[in-house]
Image 1 (cartoon, rainbow, N blue to C red):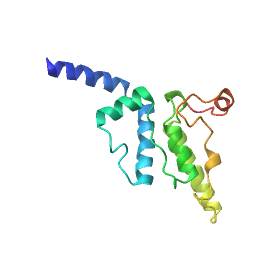
Image 2: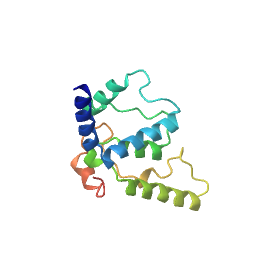
Image 3: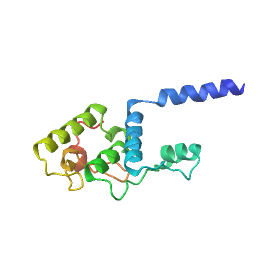
Length: 139
């Protein structure tokens, strides 16, 4: 009976898993690479899942995080309909790579590439109507 209940919960979780949750996870992986820390290390995994899913818990980008990567990772943590697709993420990274090649003195620390990512609300709330109109490709 326990196994059946567990299987039911896993089935529900599997159906909730989408590309949008993968995008959120990608944002967390970016955070881990930049922060060089384990996210929410002081919390139990079940508490993290609950607080992220139900209470909107989000990581705080490291203070020394370059603006391009900060904006990209926080875009990945937006409400699902506002998150970029992986195709858009790939385009942003390719665009900043091309910009860097054409501007050898530009740096991420200096804000390089930040303007390539549309503005969205960074507090986990829906973007204001004016910002929503500018995010065309976000879903």
